[in-house]
Image (cartoon, rainbow, N blue to C red; front, side):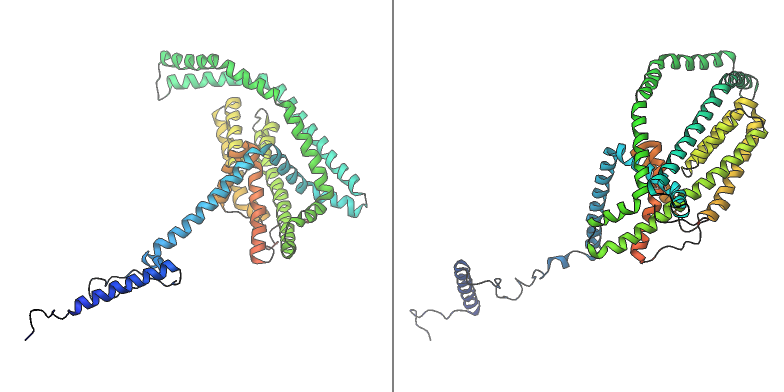
Length: 418
């Protein structure tokens, strides 16, 4: 029987607590001395420390959330890069747009330069000068003919427009709408008031356009000079640009550039053929129906056909409106039927037959490219955006697949050497 002076023996819990405190003090001393690099492991007392933290904290995050986060920040980086590139393109539009137009003209004229250089054995500079300045002379003559026809037919078209407006006014009064004369007078007076109030803004816009003629002339000269050097030294310039590419990647990038150039030549030549057929069909319909400005409207159809989807629709609408003002609603309906028939022929026969798979682009990509081109450089941006996308599509497919796309869909063969 223990005496009152004898202390009771320690319990197991007290012993474990003492050992835990001693181990903790020893671990703290080793950490201070820098001798212990291992994590501190506390003893388990059976229930109070059962929930341990996972070794890798990423495993505590669901897999779908980690995957979404990884894809999200990569998309943000790509969006930031795209925004920077578009911003730079917008700031440098006055330089990039002439370069893009010169590249398109080079793709159009390069086959003729090659014929003069290889078949007639002309020097490169002479062959390029003949083709380029011959094209400039033809373009100036074409524009002169258009302007002269506009000046000759403008008075008659103005008289027909006044008569057409009077017919529309009579139809609104006697037709199914039964608008009163007072309502029509109020509407036309409001339109006249708006024109008078905004006359200053319209006039200032015309003066601003006239003031920009010098800049337009400088841009045209820049396009001519750059086109000359692209036609004469395009291959050497492209090989010189390969210096900036790593040595291992030079050959694939060079071949991808050749494939892209082949696609651009095929695209431009096929677009010219399709635009000519569109202008010929709609122009013949306008001539047979004796619509004023038939040649001018055919030229508008030809030029607008270089802008996919939008250009054909806008030029066709202009032709229908001119026919309505000049000849009346019956002729306008016939012209509308001719425009729809030509566009259906273009979309379902000409483009698949002439362009085919080599320069085929998904319609969504065309719409996005047009929107981006219009946002950056207006109508000129819409003109050059789709060819750029076509070239990039071919070049990227060539780099990723290691082969050129099938050239079975181009009507005329093209030399990749500018």
